[in-house]
Amino acid sequence: MSKQLYIVAVDGSEWGERAAERAVHLAEQTGARVRLLSVIPWSGFQPMTLDEMAHRPLEKKEEEKTARDEILQPLVDKYKDSGVDIEGEFYWGHPVEVIRKKIKEEHAHMVFAGRRGRSRIADLVLGSVANSLAHTVGIPIVLVP
Image (cartoon, rainbow, N blue to C red; front, side):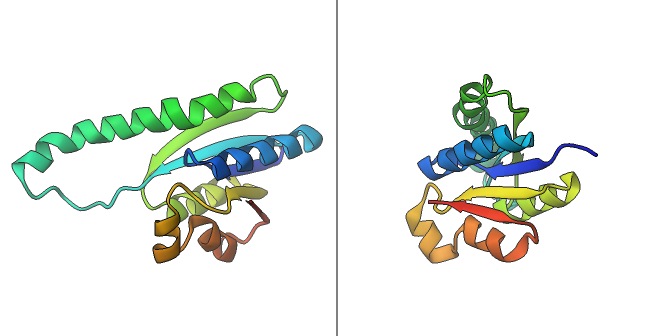
């Protein structure tokens, strides 16, 4: 039987960091693996102007660097001595869809998410990633305050 897998949605917010902390703490007790996921929202709309076409690849590379160097790697480094098998990955797309897909593909046992994300206004207007996950993932979810 393989180790359990906990997926943690992280976005650079304090709530995401607390979700990672909670997942690692539980994984220390259960022997589970922890996978940190950061999803960079990408609309999929094609650039319409020459200026947009010129800047879009640069902005994409910058977003990837931020996800890797400022969100994921600091958390992996923070918990590297915990004894927990932890890794971080970033993806492009709609956060809820990407996280749901990874949960299914990886046969995750539990998902952790901060109750809020980086943008309180977006959470209020669009609905939070955590709320959407809570209603759609089909596995236990820990919403971390």
